View 1 (cartoon, rainbow, N blue to C red):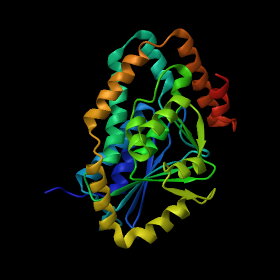
View 2: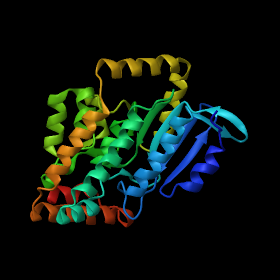
View 3: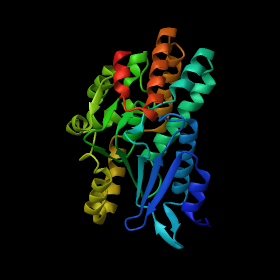
View 4: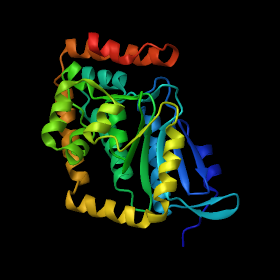
Length: 299
């Protein structure tokens, strides 16, 4: 028999770059990302998220809050950083591994990314996963948001897959998730373009499920929960059926990320210099309001 521990105390004490919050009324568990030193997916952020979500999965969503047993019905991926959801992969670590040609290091990081998006997409518990995008979600940040059952985004949010700017492609789920939402032709066109889309554009395309007014992301999320909560069992069953009709396997994700690793190891010095410029842009996002997309466009 699994013992249920005081989840809030257990997790926040053991997580370095993720803050959690549990709201009892509807059983809403929040995962707020707060990566350091830059707003991207550091290994620590990825490990914290995976620990948090796999623990919740192992308990089938059961937690103890204020001394009482509670059921998690919704798991939310959000950000603690103003203006940034997540800027994607740790490009500084990528550059070091590529220059050293350490395939093992790149593959280890890539598989950690896949373990995260797969867990969020295929959570083996009666929990609906939701991404709430406020600010910029680029590259792997966009892929993480796509892995949710429901994506909510504020109108001012910007999302894109800039990997083609440094001669690579998004290898942690973009094509797999997008093709199942908007078809392979549109998904490939988005990946090849490298352009940045507004949340409004992505909502019109069918990528964003719920569009929120600026500054109203959390209110819109709770409005959606209140509206759909009575039919939650039906919603979750339909989600499972949809995944069965158009199945995605973890093997597909792993195989694509192997392709990504091999392609990354072939990048030229020019490609790596462009990557370094994006790292500098990511660093500036911590202290300056200048959009990262401007740096990407000029690269």
